[in-house]
Image (cartoon, rainbow, N blue to C red; front, side):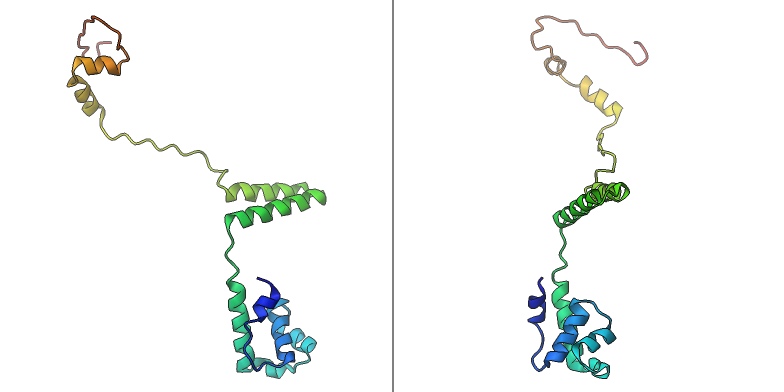
Length: 157
């Protein structure tokens, strides 16, 4: 949000000095006494309800622009990394890359989610109940003409 847009929300009835005071405090982020002095406004009058309302309206307008996306943060970090490189500050550059990596979750180990829905006994029972033709297809033996099947008991090799 640009400064003129933020100041467009000022309530009517503010003098130029009061509007400048609000600008100095809310936009330039100056201390209240210094902002009043620069605006030519007596410090005692900075607590008037109209000025308080104007300051709150400008703050609300500025807060509306705080929707920072991941892309905005990435772009800002890349700019900071490039500045650190230009100034020859490798530790600052490394810190920038570290924050960028954390932002995108690249520092976490890859998660592999394995869900086994049946117990080993249930799977054995399912295989035992399958017809021979399905077992043959499951084993990849689609071209077998004749075969002998025998049951291997647990613990027998």
